[in-house]
Amino acid sequence: MIVTTKELFKAAYGKYAIGAYNINNLEQTMGLFRGCIDSSAPFIIQISKGARSYTDKIMIEGLIRSADQVFPDAIFAVHLDHGDEQTCYDCINSGFYSSVMIDASAEPFEKNVEITKRVVDAAHAKGIVVEAELGKLGGVEEHVSVNEADAKLTDPDQAKKFVELTGCDSLACAIGTSHGAFKFSGTQGLHFDVLSAIQKNLPGFPLVMHGSSSVPQDEVARINAAGGNLKGAKGVDDTQFRRAAELGVTKINIDTDGRLVWTRVHREYFIEHPENFDLRPVGKVFMSEYAKFIADKNAKLGSAGQLEAVRKLVSK
Ligand SMILES: [Zn+2]
Image (tube, rainbow, N blue to C red; front, side, top):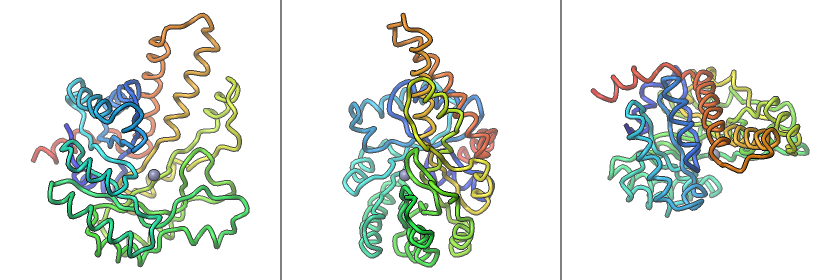
């Protein structure tokens, strides 16, 4: 059942966070649905611009429609990840997405407000909700001093103003996470002080954490032992998810970790089975490993075991 992120956030706020997972193909879709059913968790499927053009947007939407039939018990939102204005309108008008993200965070504050407001008006007219972004996530470089890194974090007073001016339904904040596998080159971690100040300014308002893969070191070691070359990869401590959830984070985006599962499974499989040229055996291993990975993340987010409570809430 496809619902809006707004409905999921209402159930989760202050208690746990909903996992938002990017998908690109059939095996990921199957693994995601299986993992969420196995762990009884509501979830958010994210489709990026890249995923829409990897094959064809109709293919990826078709996969999700089919999964909705194959897994009738699943409750999830379909969300555009990091949309530009045009892609947002395309998704809003498609009638399939329940939620879009407009990312104009690279623009100056006023321009970000202007673009976000236009998307919010178009989306709300069709009952679709909008995530916006304020602040700049980045790969934090070793030579950048703490002060410069701090300057990229979301300003709590601006956040309040931004939400009031745009009417967006949730806000992605920069609080110390970064995109990609090469996170936190130093001892940098989540800035709970900033998060707490944002929550104080926006009580009850759903916040979003991007770039929140944990980049498990054993996973990286296995990939490298099987011929990979991922150097210095680090991520977010996923034992901090629950604390972030208590401070108003209702959606946590995890993409890199899932890619690591894919890389590890395929590298190891073909080393162990050099005679194999059938794509299905390795695909089966991947779907099963991906489902386990998803169930494990949902347990860390606190969304595991919440499916029936959410069902009661959305069927009212
Ligand atoms: Zn992101």
